[in-house]
Image (cartoon, rainbow, N blue to C red; front, side, top):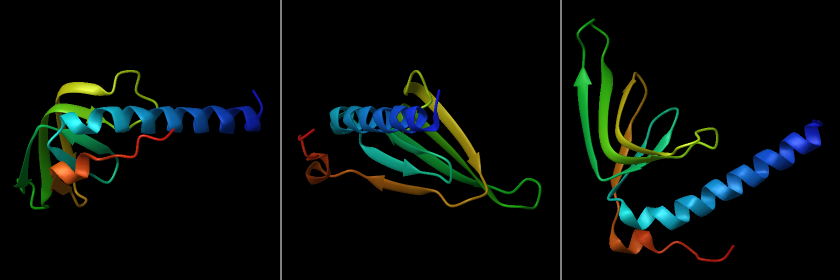
Length: 103
């Protein structure tokens, strides 16, 4: 496989992922961003932990969708993320659900 073929494949996968996101965003209540992933979910709980002296975040989500082109299944019943980096949680509003329908 040439580098051009690989780039074309990745571009097609990213476009397919965006289309899937556009189709599913309306069924979720929250957007969660971590240093490694972007999630949509219907319930989220963020706890600050510091058992070893260093603070970290424990993020628990349920009914989640993961933005990742390399995952064969992006829907997950529950997800737990541990991270030392920032976590951003936003509640989606009805107006946030209006994603352009053009391909």
